[in-house]
Image 1 (cartoon, rainbow, N blue to C red):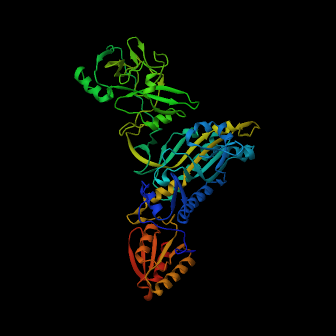
Image 2 (cartoon, rainbow, N blue to C red):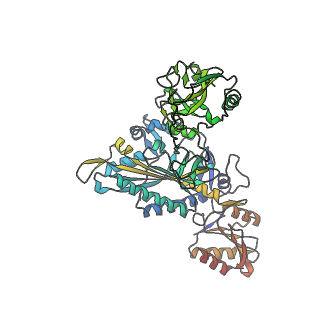
Image 3 (cartoon, rainbow, N blue to C red):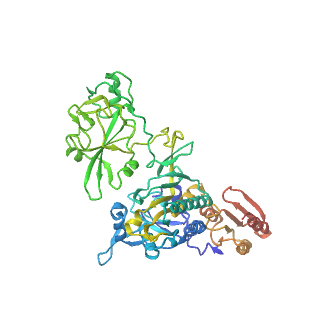
Length: 586
């Protein structure tokens, strides 16, 4: 098909949009692929829809090859199913909630586990109907507090979500790895580098959870990997717990004066000045006060004890205390708990425990896994301007449990013994979960097994961010003049440009466009009669079709210029040879 640019709904821009932060956002707007409607919400123009459709085609082909069948659910969903699974509350402020004229509660779906589960429950009742995998490509909605980076994190986005249904755990394993393998083929076909990392399931629930991350400097996810093959996002990373240490000969804990030392840095400097020994931040125990807001609105303080050379990682804390919201304690929180001496908090006092559910404060106290029995610490003495040294875990204090909230660092040992880990940045492009029976149990999805007994179905969930992938491909494929699409997802196969005022150029361009169309190419033909060559060339480079064919000065002699948009190579050759070259390269 030949698309004429003079009639095509596109307008390019010469300047970057003021709100654009990343290259993909700038170029997709400038080249006429998308237009902003509101923060994190974009309209799709014909160019953008063409690229999006190419990506969806790859996904559909691989889903079909993996045995999945396509369905389509509404974005507008009723409250009841999400309330039955607890996610009406768990999603909190991320949900777009609304009411109909009769006061019925609805939401714009952030994901569709409930809908898929209820559909299968409605139609299937026997193990003979399983295994089943169904999927959709649908818009999703999440009220992101800070939508950013164009399509990389928006409030409306397109996602492919698939769900598998099996009546045995063994069947779930087969379905899971079938989808996982399909994801690898999809990303390979789209030319995307990826790392498969162990992940946290979050509000989705379930057991096994893996993310496909694309390594990129603009990624908002931090992940770790070792040279030995371990990979996980920081939320799912687990600390290697050291062995407990004997402490029979440990000296008694001793309180010492520590004026003006409310920070770890000042405490270490002072301790090295007044105590025997050479101390670092790793020898101190930092006690961080966090405030949790639970789903029922109640607020709880919790204190986490971590080595002083670490900080609390917000994402790890969010996962550790989910579904509660986590924030640092406020001055009002401290005012309600006078037993906490800010800057000098510790788990111990000469009169007994200060932190923990059985202590004088009654505040829950959780420890980093490195704080094992026998480790010795310098920490607050719960007295203003005083700390305590030689405080021994397991002898002088204990926690109510352990929690993974401390920051992960380069060089930390991988939990599988494969060596030290390295930190990197990445963007999530796919996520696969073994949901298990969480949603089936909540919504009553059961089938009769081989023995005629009812069993609860076990499920898997598999998501791909379609519009995010489009943005990442744009992020990877551009230069200082514009986009440079890979042929597999480009909006057109060839961009034909007629330049100058000579009718011969337009006649030749018209003829070439028809020949390319006849050869099966999708052609964008710049037939604008009153547009200068410079503007036409600029638009061709900005739009980013990988092959550009220019009919200009040499048109009367039957010659054209063939551009390779990616390499920048430009070659003058007879028009017939140019068409033959494009057919050969395809």
